[in-house]
Length: 155
Image (cartoon, rainbow, N blue to C red; front, side, top):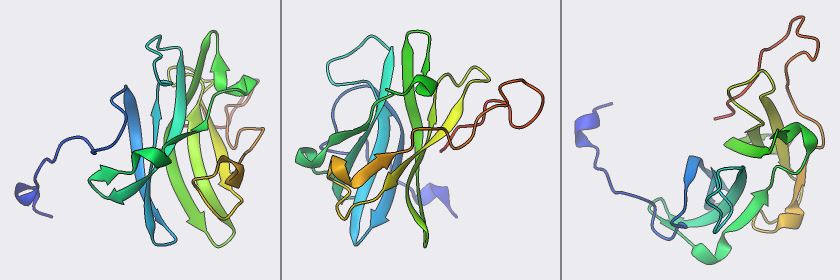
């Protein structure tokens, strides 16, 4: 792969002009989507990171009217002190599962976990088509006696 032929195009047009990280782009049913972690609109407190989803018109342009909040860190295991974190989304599709694996809680701690938001309905742009698992997919051993230590980052 020759990186000298690459061209920086700048931010994806049509995306909110607000703090965001960890974007992942994926195709599904002939359409292109982008999922990312960011602060809630209008919030600059750095106490919550939500997951957002939008459809892309092409790799350089989002369709703004399709953007919605896919997940808020509203489960106890997604929170640490006064912070709620959903970040590092990664799309995963197998014959038995379609959805997003994401990281939750504090990346700087052994409480970092992986969660699942499963696509269960026909249209990924409908909140009702997604089901957030109530328990983490992977986490540290609560007793600290083995297993993964702060598993994540999903991306």
